[in-house]
Length: 545
Ligand code: GLN
Image (cartoon, rainbow, N blue to C red; front, side, top):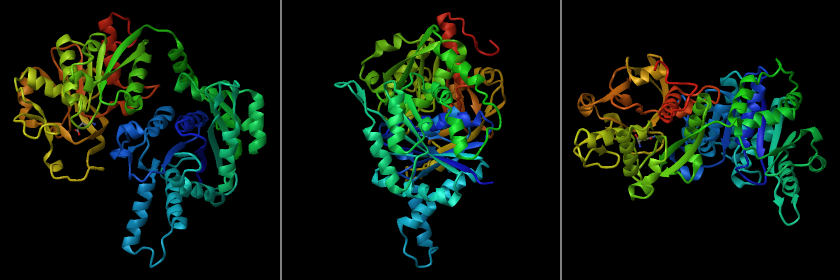
């Protein structure tokens, strides 16, 4: 079976929502019974985003197989309810690494290695692989960046060639652009769109659909103009005004028959009438005015919400099913450690401390953990958030005043969080963490057991450090319960406090597995506990309580 491919390119500007649009279209195709997959091509030279600062590209999203990927993969998984693999992520760095490795092995038998065809062939191989590996009928492939970027050229050349390679009717090209609005003349302009389409055509790619993003409503006449100048049928110019809710976008695109138009282009008939019942319910619920709870997210990159996008989404999913709205309070951990903004902790109904690396802000996160423990405020610690909860407990309850993670203090006598022996000798930074899905056994009669209602779960990881086993007994004797352990019982996966309504931390990242139509039990439990504290009739109370 040939996998048919829908390619997504962008023009005019980056950050106009190519990833979300591709993900939304994926949802619409899936709703019509197609087996789909989705892939992001990132033209930067990093081998993966794992080594990139969140300030550059936002959160690093981790897949089951441990691939560290762009945050768009999070949109794909959430919108399409998929579990992707490393086949779904391709960077220029990976492509070059592969080609250069082959060259060193002598695989090219003395040939000259060139961007065309060697780099482009490797890109094409990877695009073909994603569909094959998942047996997908349709693959959605997003080219990162904007048309005209020098580094994107080999990718555009590769996808241009694929139209011929696969034969007509097996590919469709969707081009996303931005329509700027000029206040002076009160006009929305199409010229940059025309230019970016011209640029695309000069490479040999003729778009089948243009999604015209804008902050303002786009009139029909403008769409007709775009259609005329860009050689796209009028029905395939899709105006997409900035939506107040990302999850509304599939429904907006559905109204404009986007899936039908693309299926037609791919010579496919829908396998079933689209089933979007659950999605519509979810969007309706998000729209409904509900009592709000305030969640404080204490992190180091709080100015940039994209750095915590999966955490924010997971909180929203859980709140939605509990029948409450969420007001996020972004609290800077570095401010807290300087004594700034402490009063903001007083104003929240629950605290989430997400993952993080490096010592900046750690003491602020420890302050937040102490506040939650002492005030009996619901607390959810994710990875580093669990580690600071353990450090705080060691300092305040076990009396180890210098307790720390050896990540932040190599000389402490109480490294309650430490490297596992096999990690200790690693010198490289990229891809050297405990990454991806690992099993976790839930201990009976614990909060974790009540939340999960299962004996074993698999969760996604991304960390180097672990709870130090030499201190485990001291913790357990003093009220900390290690309620999730690796099957060999060597690694602590979940820690919780006995004398607290809801203080729990996990060494993994549950946020990556939360879905808008299926919130994660740890987040649901956290929100239910927040609701209980506020006396709100949460519609999803703690299971079993
Ligand atoms: N820096 C910590 C570690 O490597 C936590 C990582 C994280 O929060 N993702 O273990």
